[in-house]
Structure formats: structure tokens, C-alpha cells
Length: 501
Image (cartoon, rainbow, N blue to C red; front, top):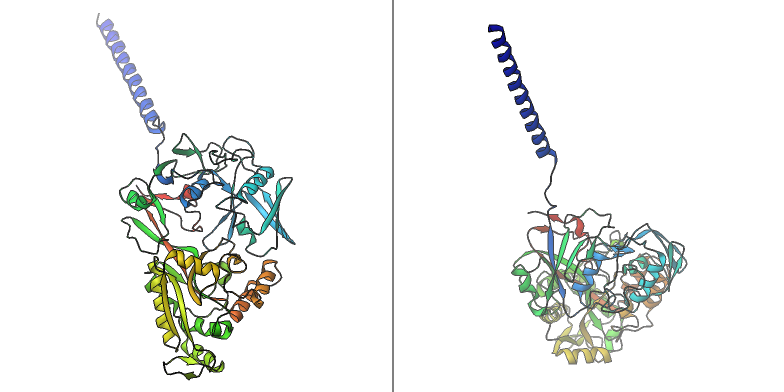
């Protein structure tokens, strides 16, 4: 009996241990599953960006900068242009120049519908871009594009170090972008999902921090800054184009635009026909002082007609942006302007250094700049009579050449093409037979260096560069944008923007 009892107790104890062992094993398995298996949904990290309801999202029909910039989220160009205006390959694998042609070799890439990006798609895109509002000026010196295998041959009127910068237009799939209502198929990081949302494209090779882009419709452009401030969207480039500063209640950074502000001359008027007099005026202007005060810091002084961020300028010895009154006066003395008349103005006995300076009164930046220029030139005995006129009168005078001097502004392309001054819309008053015209043409064809062309500019001084205007990039504090791209691509490298919250 006693032995039987002992056996039953042993059996009971073994059963208890077995149950405990099974229970412990179950707990370990569950703990392991909880540690290594994440069954939660992927986190949505989104950004809201503005778009104009009255403009097209097709990059070849879009007019405004907001809609044009959005195209680079769902499309890629052959080259991205960096803030120093170097060309960074995107869809391009490499390129080479031969004579007046640039051959671009494409890398392997796919559109959002999984079809391959081909040279024929690039040619199709070029033909649309060539006549588009956003890219026609950029492609002004590119006459044709032809597919050769997996490469595209672009024919230029001449090839120089900056020519490739023209190839920054979006590449889309053939036959998907023929009208303003078409939303093209691209190869970008994002793809449209519905009418107002972009998500990561399944064919994109990028690993993006931001995986959702919501498009916020802007109905009235005049309220766009307020819309950012109240949080309706997260990023805005305010270009301050109306000539007045706008305080924006958001994180912000000053962005140098590709807009040259300059002092223009009528070369047919009296003393202004002399390159020496124009050079004396160039040296008399303290750009650092007058541009910062007139533009309230939203500009960058320049002594060349090219953007001061341009990489080609880095190793060139340039004149100072500060005034050199001694040099200015020395030039005038040598030109015979050593006598002052009864009004205290320099004269050589034939011409008096007194000029009118036309400026549009609606742009306060330029108006203040005009008066600052007058103050600077007064120091060397040149009188400037500032003539503030309406926009309509201003445009009429510039177009007809009915001015002596004027304050102008021109937006240049990413290839820094000076065509507007050499036969284009800002060429009135400029002597097109100046040696600089020939020198610039030779540079475009790659026959002389950038530095040699710039020396010719200083010899002729067809205009006086003053500054490049700047804008404000305003954004929500939870994002840190990448500002290493040229300002036309305001969402450059968005997939790698840092999200802080």
C-alpha cells in the first residue's frame, strides 16, 4: 500500500512538471514572436505641397513654378542642376561632346508602369519641352534630338562647359503628355494616386524618408504665404518678385535665384557710347552696400553677368564688389572728363556726365536701388536723375530703346545664356557690334575659355551687373530640405530630406 502511494505521488509530480514545462515553452515562444515579428502597418510619413488649381501638372504645359517643380517628384531629368550650376547625372549614365553635339548615354531605369526608359522617350520629351513655357528658353540653343540605340544625340549651335545644363527637362513615357490634361508617366520617386496624392513608385530604386505627398490646391496666389503659415502645406519658395519683402512665420532660408539685376545703358547716347565711361560707372558702384540696403539682404552682389554661385567663377580673379573710386576717377581723367561745369558735373567740353535713370515705380527694390546708384555716382561728379514710371511706361521705353540708363532684371537659364542681351528682349540700347558679341559667340562654340570671354566683357562693359536677386525658402520645422540644387528644382532630393518629428 505504501509503495503504491509513493508511485502515485511520483506520477503526479511528473505530470505537474510536464505541464509547467509546456507552459514555459509556450511563454518563451510567444515572447520570441513579440520580439521579432512586427505585424504593425508601415508608418506614413507625409508632406503637403502646394499646387495651382488653374495650372497643368503636365510639366510641358505648366506655367507656374509650383506645378513645374512638382513634375520632378514623378519624373526624372537627364541631369539635375546643382546650386553651383554643375550638372549631376540622373537618367543619364554619362555624356560626351563631339563638335556641336552632346551624346547622352542612358542608364537602366523604369517608368512607374514598369516599362523601360528608352532613348525614344527622351526624344519625345525633348520635342515637347522645346516648345513648352518652362523649357523653351532653356533649350533655345538645342536644335534637335535623335535616338541612337540607348543614347540620345542632342544638336547644339555650339558646345561649351555649360551646354549640358540645358538638358534638365523631365523625361516622360512616349505618348503620355500630348495635352495639358494629360498626367504623364514618369520614372520619379513618386507616382500619382488619385487627384491629389503621390505615393512611392513601386519601380523606384530610391529609399525615401517621405513616402506620401499630399497636394494642397491653391486657388488664390496672393494668399499662398498665409496658407503656409497656418499649416495647410509644408514648403514654399517665395521669390519676392513684386519687389517687396514679406515676413513669413516659418523656418526659412535665403535662396539666390538666377535673376540678374543690372544697370542698362543706351550705347547711342552721348558719353554712354564710350566703354571707358561705362567702366568708370562700373567701378564707382559699391554693390555690397547698395544691393543689401535696396534688397534688404535678399540678393547677392555680383561683378559679372553670371550667377555668383557658378562653379566656373571660383578660380577666377574678379574685381571687388566694393567701389573703387580712385580707379573710376582715373578713367574719367584719362577720357578728358577733368573739368567741372557750373553745376559741379564732369564734362569733357562736349558731353556732360548727367543722365536719366528709368525705373518702374511699382517695384520698391528697384526704385530704392536706382536712388542708391544715383548717390554713388554723385561721388565722382556724375548726376543721375531717377525717373520713376509706371510698369506700362517702363516696358514701353525699354522695348523701344527710349532711355539713357535703366534698372533691369533678367532671369537667366541654368546654362547662363546671355541671349537676352545679345539679340533678345533685353538687347535694346546695347551695341550688338561690340567685340564681346563675337567673344561670347566663340565661347558658346567652345573656341575660347570662359575666362577669356569674361575678359572681353570687362573690355566692353555692355551693362553693369549689380546683384542676383534672392528669394525665401519657407518650410515647416519638422523637415530639413536639401538646398544643394538650383532653385528651379525646389524639391530636389526630397526622398532624403530629414524628418525631425
